[in-house]
Image 1 (cartoon, rainbow, N blue to C red):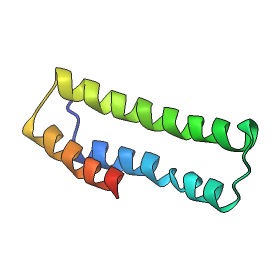
Image 2: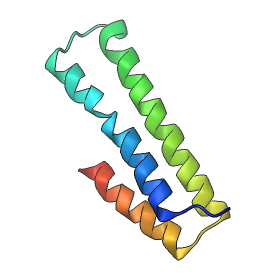
Image 3: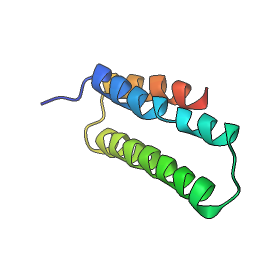
Image 4: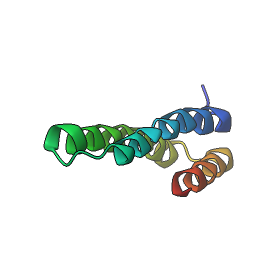
Length: 79
């Protein structure tokens, strides 16, 4: 089974769309551990796990298609 570029791009896009939660936190910022830090940690953890999976795949099964997918998603992450 091969990992297709579309799999990586689509799956990472789903994770990145969830990052809109950061915007919601900024709009109603409440400087408490429960209201700000814990939600930010959950968002960061989700992104870390997703990138970790993609990085692992790239390390063990690198291909031009996978490199292109990673480059595509990196641009989305920066925006």
